[in-house]
Image (cartoon, rainbow, N blue to C red; front, top):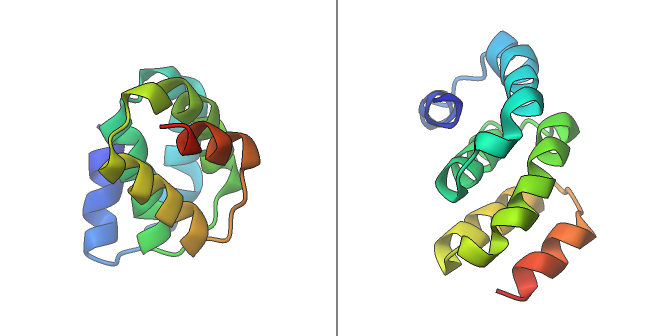
Length: 101
């Protein structure tokens, strides 16, 4: 799945421009409703690790994060919040929904 692939590249500190810049954003935009809590956290963490600020990806996943917020544990919330902080992405609606968890 896309989040595992992205995280594998990020763990190796490999910023594959085609993968992170084109393939994943297209996949996320078309399939964000399929992402589970773990997938959301992994994907956002991968982008934070490679220090690639993709508003396309984060905006596409934001709504799904808000939908999944009631199912998130503390670890998922902290990974998602940390990814936003590391990339200086402010998403007030998402932060509000995570704060209630």
